[in-house]
Length: 90
Image 1 (tube, helix red, strand yellow):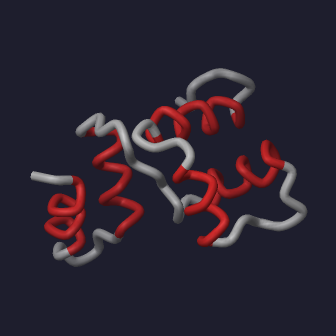
Image 2 (image 1 turned 120 degrees about the vertical axis):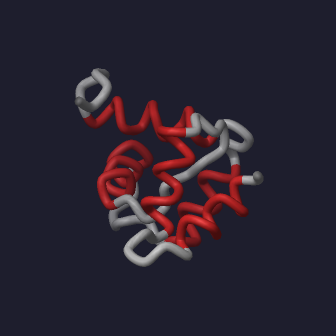
């Protein structure tokens, strides 16, 4: 199944939204091009790392993350690691 098909199937389940579905694609299925745009911690990290004076909007995240295709999952991993002093979250 494609990422989109999996996300659609998962979000049909009550209680599972896009953030959970994309997290599943990223962590459980190890898909290479997943971006967690709805993750607040990721937004704060991008704000800090890219010098935004505000929390990035959805459109700003799309424009920024499009540059990382087709390896957005790797970018997300590096951004999360930077939030934990270079250590992966536990």
